[in-house]
Length: 316
Image (cartoon, rainbow, N blue to C red; front, side, top):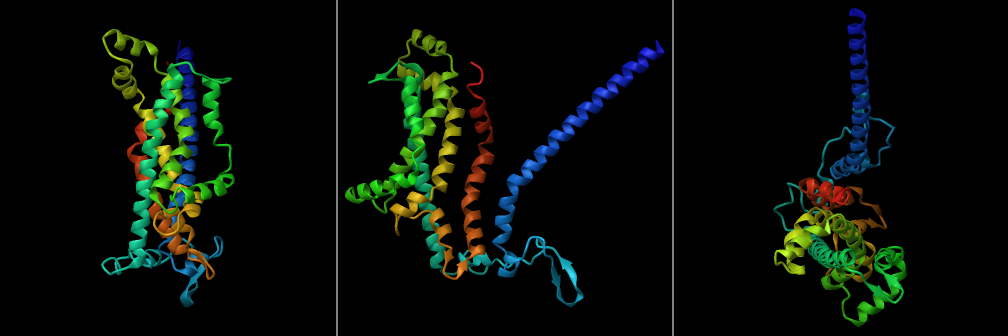
């Protein structure tokens, strides 16, 4: 009896030790991944406060503080607000007139309007297209539903540079160069295939019996879609919206190609910090930090929708 109790206790201790060991490994890996993911944001934020000597200092070469020879690692520096001062956003310049600050807010506003409008349009159109592909049977020439879905996704294979000259000529003829409307239309088309693919999987995970029951109760097809299907697919729509926002917010190639002065966006302004005198790392870091923070905040506040959107469709 005593041996049995001792054996059970040893078994419980072994199981508990394995549980703690597995948890330690998992959380250690998660902590490492969090560090890898957050370190670029930390590096960008700190670079915007550094002087040129602090920015260019080697990663493994320590600096020395004055005559005493005290080691001062790279991450130990005195904040100088250099990057934010160049944008007119430092405490010393925030209340002064600044053309750079005005230009920054104008381009920031362009990015907000263009990315939001194109993402909303892409989600609206993509949701309708995805619902049709998941619920109805289509045939266009030799293509059926699966072929049409793959056709939409295959549009992402085409490199953007291939479209540079055709889009430039087309936008010149339509008088859409350097306009928000032109970028909104182009960005909507660019992210539409991704939205369709995501939402098609979302609708495929929703049982058709729910819509059939709603139509038996007197709802039309549109009524069942708006009152039954759409609320269930909302997390997937939010996830698709966030992905569209990230892609359109960070898009640089067409923004630089099709705009010049009126519809420039933040990525174009970030790239403009490279000149003949070198790279203004502090200004670029300040601009980059201001550009990524809206997306970080959106991800934090809408995290639960992202998780639901990724999990939806796994089980019918």
